[in-house]
Length: 172
Image 1 (tube, rainbow, N blue to C red):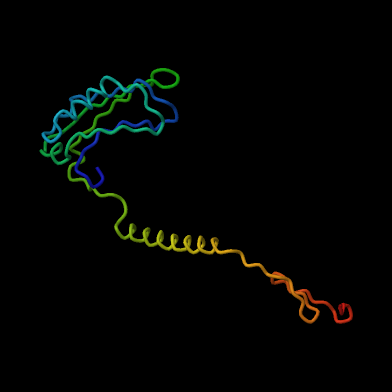
Image 2 (cartoon, rainbow, N blue to C red):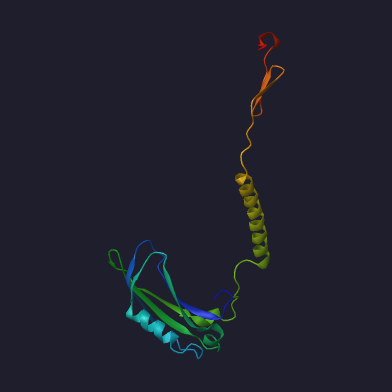
């Protein structure tokens, strides 16, 4: 749930190939919650009918209701979940498992990180933006052109000093 109150039904393809005809049966079906009438039934109906295709890395989420309502009483909430699908070489072995939603009751529901980490990231980003602005300002200035010049037999050009021995100097 990660700092929220909504319990989610999530179907995802974590494999490297396309999954087709993905079907998920939840038995007994999840009970509807008063704040989301029809949402749980619609999600379970869609999952039972099957999802035509699910690309690698793709996930689909449905709201199952507010966690404190779904998990409200102390009774077990055991559901058998059966997942079937077709992979690139035909049907995959069905995945069957039980989930007791009550196991999540009183679980910690907080996202990873802290406001301190957010503040630090914003500070770092601000510093980098200032540096980028300074670089952009320098880049927009016209280039400085150094003219070569000779002073007392020494030629100066672009910060390079060429020294000539006194006996090789030309006095032109």
